[in-house]
Amino acid sequence: MIEVHDLHKHFGGFHAVDGASLRIRKGSITGLIGPNGAGKTTLFNVIAGRLPPTSGRVTMAGEDITGLPPHALFHKGLLRTFQIAHEFSSMTVRENLMMVPAAQAGESLWNAWFARGRIRQEEAALRRKADEVLDFLTIAHVADERAGNLSGGQKKLLELGRTMMVDARIVFLDEVGAGVNRTLLNTIADAIVRLNRERGYTFCVIEHDMDFISRICDPVIVMAQGKVLAEGSAQEILRNEAVIEAYLGTGLKNKVPA
Amino acid sequence: MDLLNALVTFLNFVFIPAAAYGAQLALGALGATLVYGILRFSNFAHGETMAFGTAATILLTFGLQALGVTFGPLPTALLALPLGIAATALLVLGTDRAVYRFYRVKRAAPVIYVVASLGVMFIMSAITRFLVGVEDIQFTDGARFVINARDFRDWSGLEEGLALRSTQLITLVVAALAVAALFWFLNRTRTGKSMRAFSDNEDLALLSGINPDRVVAVTWIIVAALTTTAGVLYGLDKSFKAFTYFQLLLPIFAAAVVGGLGNPLGAIAGGFVIAFSEVMVTYAWKQVVAYAVPGDWVPAGLLQLMTTEYKFAVSFAILIIVLLFKPTGLFKGQSV
Image 1 (cartoon, each protein chain N blue to C red):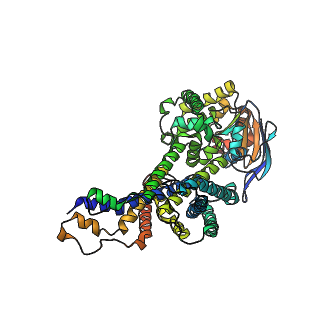
Image 2: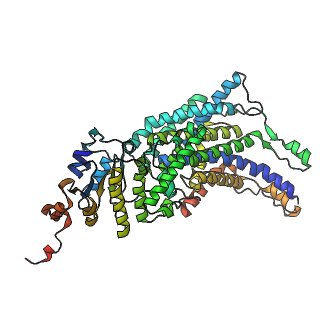
Image 3: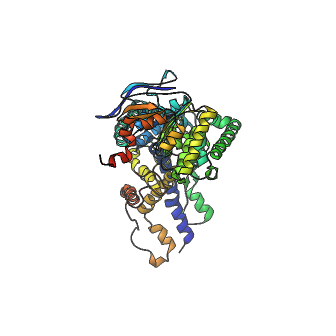
């Protein structure tokens, strides 16, 4: 689905992503883990077109998408969420969702004047869809609340909801569980798995919660210092010496005097 | 004591002129606030855009008049206005293409845009002066008055006359129409909503598939329409002089900041706040007071707080006070 070839992103002398190569299989829920500063989010930013790469190539289903702007990628079905949830704070939750599907009839000024009926139909359909999504995510009760007033966890759900408004092909989730309580985290995990099975979304998930990762992700890719360190199933990763060294930590082992 | 005469004097010399001036500032401030909200910089070339739009409209008006076309009792300039707007839209879209787009692609800091807009300002002002010169130009035609001072005196039997110039009425009506159209556009149409979304959170807007080039282009066209309309109304109400339009930049920005930068509702409120303060502080109140209090209380002085030369100081003072105590403006805008 997505292939990254020898990708570099340098900020001055700092090499945030330093020759990363990886593949995300179609239909998978790929986990991306690694210590803070490993370059995970930068990698997302480059793939999703927010930052131009210093060098390297990104392809999607064989097509070169390196450096395409975010709105162009959106139309190809590549979506992402942010580590710190973004929202249109002055609009209601429902309006936030209804904002998403681009190229609606109401976008043309001509239609805004002369095809009111078509717009109204389309808006009604969108509204139904938004309400379904809110139901699915268990936040239907805040539909008319201004999105800026939501709690952190609810904003995370809203982020996920945005990706459900269109038929996405691949969704990049950046720490979708950060700052979210256990129950809500389970809701999110269920939603991801269902979207993957029922709608065939491919996911790539950055997350620090290993339970979450091992529950839904296969394979798991580990990054450290801008490079890919290891790849494999969650079980393999948990046993991998290099990964334990770089990221998971050795736990009590070090504390036992030799 | 004669309260009716006092009221008429107040309406005639303070309220009506300030309302018309306020409407002109509000339209100008709306343009500035849209550029700030969506393109995220303070456009120093805003006053010169107004001047260019007005100059283009004046030339077209003269052209129409030479062809013998008039607009009945209304000024011919209103007929020429749509074409003037089109010319201005082409100019600002060209400027965006040649100057601002370069910085947008580079994701430059806002201050760089501001300095770039300063350069654009000088070029635009040169173009305007090249087109119509630096002289004072009167381009109002059609009926002069809706209410004539003498007719009003004869009709009401009061000592004071009330005059309502047709340009003042036109200003208020056109401004109201323009504002209504803008708010309908921003709140009801998909493109307007895209613009609000873009202003609210640019990154998220891009990820929602909103095409930034389109939003930017539509913004510039609206800005061209607002500034040209504001400039033409101001020119009809007073007269056109290139340098005056450059000076309008200050009250316009004061209005936008006072209302809350990036907030369209605030820009309108700000426009009227600035206009009324300017007129009321520089008006000599002696006549009004003379009618309103018993004869022997009337003071000898003019009761003028500041002479009209200082009117820009009023904008400055309000700007400073607002920035000190409420940096996000009366209506919540983006902080500067």
